Image (tube, rainbow, N blue to C red):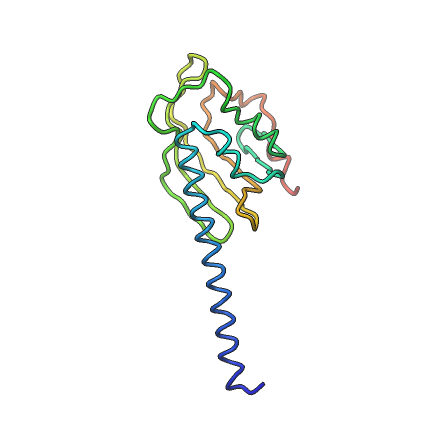
Length: 165
């Protein structure tokens, strides 16, 4: 192939790849938007779970929980358990969000809520979501500033043990 035809072919290939990556990123952006809208409403647990892959891994860094699989994730979140009541119109507020490729990082806070007649204050969170090719969440890493009434920091598990896994 001559240089005159090789260069345009390379440019077209790179442009196509760039468009494909942009389309995927836009798809992820739309999924993330719908995911957090569903989370904010906190009414449709089945829809919420539909965003996750069957092989989801969730790591809660502060509480040192490591959840594997959609069934275990469903039990962990437990939206269907009685006792939770939102005190504001949305369950969370987003402050910042970065989406690049198949990864979304979201910083915000959970709004105050009641759990079995106990009021809990707003809590900061940062969540990292990683998506597979089908647009399902395959990994979630949470950093949540739990109040000391929810976590006994002197006896909690140690997520630092996961370093290097």
